Image (cartoon, rainbow, N blue to C red; front, side):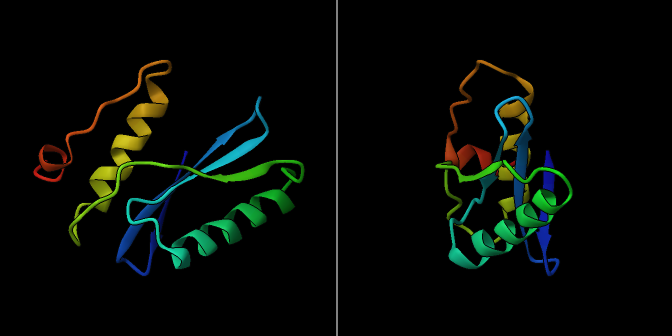
Length: 97
């Protein structure tokens, strides 16, 4: 799991699944500039020996404010640590945390 911070403004994350040879990208606002930057990070990882890994943008809950991306990224990490459980997200409750 790799958190990504963009210009001290926005958080996204990459999750590398070694057995599946995949790099999953999570972005709480699902915007192209962050997706492109994350792909650049993933490309750097590929150059470091993960060359046969696919980068997969994930469908995840979206934030509707300008400040809760860090909470969303933490929630995505929790979903990775607790395998086999789909974490249901109440967007309104999550953004108040």
